Image: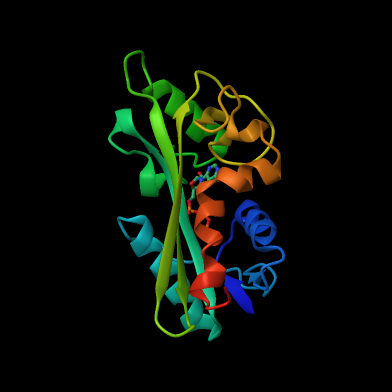
Amino acid sequence: MQLVFATHNAHKADEVRAILAGTGVTVRTLADLGYHEEVPETGSTFIANALQKAHHVHAALGLPCVADDSGLEVDGLGGAPGVHSKRFSPEATAEANNRLLLQKLTPGVDRTARFRCVLALVGVGEDRTADGSCEGRIALSESGEGGFGYDPLFVPDETPGRSMAELTADEKNAISHRGRAFRQLPALLGLS
Ligand code: ITT
């Protein structure tokens, strides 16, 4: 079964291809299809944004679509950056986002956090969603070269002392919010 993965984020696409390997589900990304237009995400929840992205691309292409809306929730910041994770800083780069996050986490602020991912499947029967999360805490400084986004600052509870960016791709996918959400996809499609 082939789906369009409604993302412009190449890191997400690489991860999802690896997560789905051997399941019988394959994805083509927007880049693969030469679709370079922006995909709107104006909702205030991960689920609303995932459904919005999948519906938008399904309407444009007429093909079954899956979308991922994801982000980091930090308890001491009231769940921020949350759905605003990509554009947390004005520069909206990973470097600036991570710098701003460290600035906001002054001594005494609760650093417990989680990554969340909601996927939405549109165009295969009724709309369906699934979610996954990964609990951890925000480190005092960045470490590691792998992954993307906030990974150098996020230390999963399951890998004490190692940030998400210090894990191999397989190690990240085994415990990540995205791995946990997308491993449900074959069942959503009735394949397992
Ligand atoms: P698409 O909407 O095109 O899929 P995006 O990067 O805009 O790509 P989101 O709106 O879902 O995706 O924002 C996700 C942001 O949350 C992402 O840019 C990172 O800042 C952060 N994020 C999500 N998953 C992450 C992960 O596995 N590791 C580190 N940061 C992550």
